Length: 232
Image 1 (tube, rainbow, N blue to C red):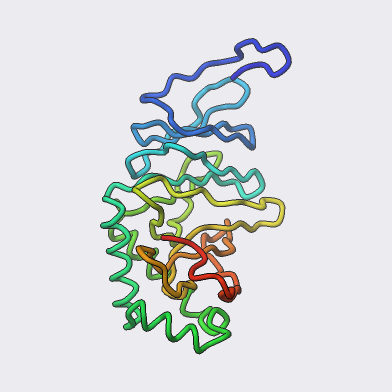
Image 2 (cartoon, rainbow, N blue to C red):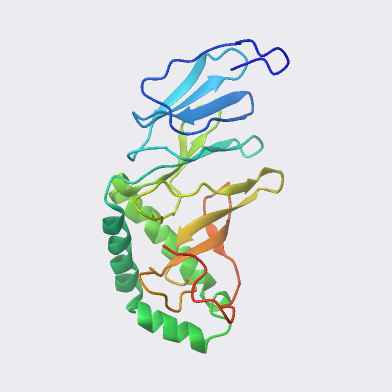
């Protein structure tokens, strides 16, 4: 940490491994992750370690933790342990098995139902409860973690299946801390995807509740030019 007015060193913290993500600060805490997959919370004034938490994944690289002072949380996204094809294929099959519908069947059903998102709110919630249970059974597949900002304790398991490209770290969420809401890239069998070569379905963006972790799919139909909202 450097004095903003003078440019002089205020403190230095020695992590256990290289730091490849940007730090974030809030609530008197500076937080970041190193490549031993440890997340740290240090005192913003002194640099003294307040907590350390061991997370899952291969890397924090490219992105940053999202900090909410009012929400009292720090959210981390990590590069998956498994090859990203294995992650995406596994959940593709899981969504199909759970709903009893193939991806093409989902696409055809969405075309016939203009209120697809509204008519499936209840199932999206049940789906997220099922994803949470899945990740508790297979914790090595968890790539989104929510910690208490002051203690480093895990607050809950977010119902977020990995989505990203080339095995990269997924984009972190956006948090509107003052209003207690955010936006998260997530996977759902009820996403909008009507084609696209080498594009995976089931990926969407939703409104995220930082208090519970649950995500509300945004009601947005397919535009005339659009084959998918997001590439998974």
